[in-house]
Amino acid sequence: MNWMRPLSLGLLLCLSSGANAASAIVYDDDGRYGYAMNHSTLSAAMQRALQHCAVRSRNCAQTATTTAVGYSAIATGTVAMGFALGEKTADAAQRKAERMCRQRANDCTLAILWRETPSGIAPPAHPGHAVPEPRLYSSPEVGQDAAGTTH
Image 1 (cartoon, rainbow, N blue to C red):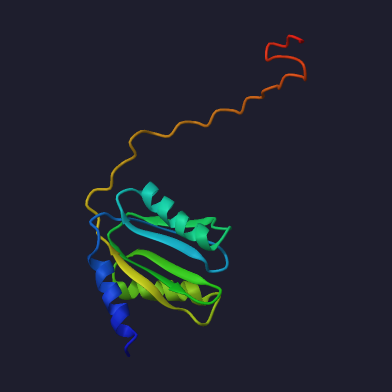
Image 2: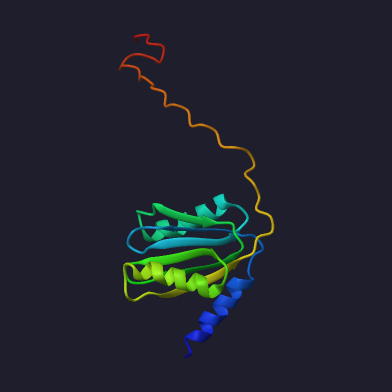
């Protein structure tokens, strides 16, 4: 049971860390993932989770986020992962994450469990802007300058 001591210590650190609660998970279909917990904004949490996932996979296309008070968990197996975000109890988060993981793998175990503890999620500084339409640029022919004058 020596393996439980580091797990328990890590769990205690996670439960007591941070005062903000934007958490995100980014994952692929093969069980590779990245996560971020207790960030001040959803954007910051998503960026961090994507950075971690991109180190492991080129297909980090699925996401989940929360700003709710509660417990979150990630369970992993050899080719699968499962998660729960913002559950009322630690046990509920663990059960939900393991159940999701076991839909694709039989060797699922709890990887991490944490508690979201919000204290005012910061709204975006300013709203996003529409992406402008691409402009087509023509390159000058050989022997012409940008105005089209031949030399």
